[in-house]
Image (tube, rainbow, N blue to C red; front, side, top):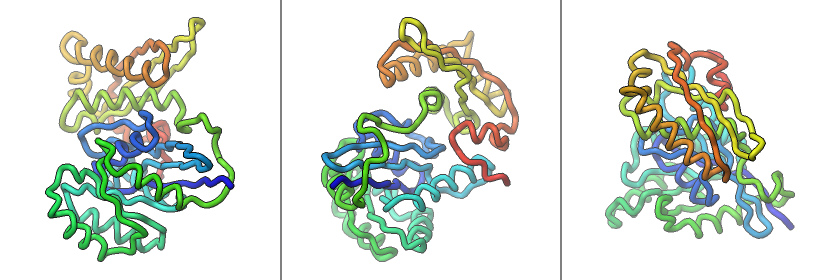
Length: 297
């Protein structure tokens, strides 16, 4: 009998959910940067283990929303948890039991959802501090099991996968066995460009920018031509992204092109332009273009 089910990765920003998704599936599906709130929309990672198909749902980090875009991100996270068969609550062991983590545990526990606790980044904390931290968190909710892992190094991942596989309900596979994600290539291209913006710019610039793929065409030689636009909220952000004599945008494009070529396993020709668009993060069309549902208020 085959098994199949959805497993939501839930947690505060920068808990390591995207790194864990990529580690679990063995593929680059979610963009990863050292900055918080990198993930904006739900990303599905598909893994087949024997007779089981595990459908991991990477969700945006849960935080206090301020913008319309923020509200859409937080809503996507809770929707991902609600729709899943069970949830993995990721906690950054180095940051510990913060107030935002307490709030997430309280809300997740109130839903009555089946969940396990995953303490991530345990390689960055004194081992003697892990037991007290685990005890403090365990008092707040009824966790099916507790795991201590490092998503970055892979420590503890096999045990976590065994648990997830055993928790899946019986049922037919929902996706073809050779699929890794349901993320459209157009959105993947935009996300990889956005990842480079996070990696190559600072402060609020990455948070004030969004990327949309305008054209995605397979050429006669099987290469792919991608045209994308980067929308920024402020004139200063546009200047930073373009850089002196266009150096910054060329570097962003070159690195994103190499990454995208590796992911798509073909030659990619990437063309970028930057447009100033004040208030883009309050536009329904821009929010939907990121893969989110518009919260409408």
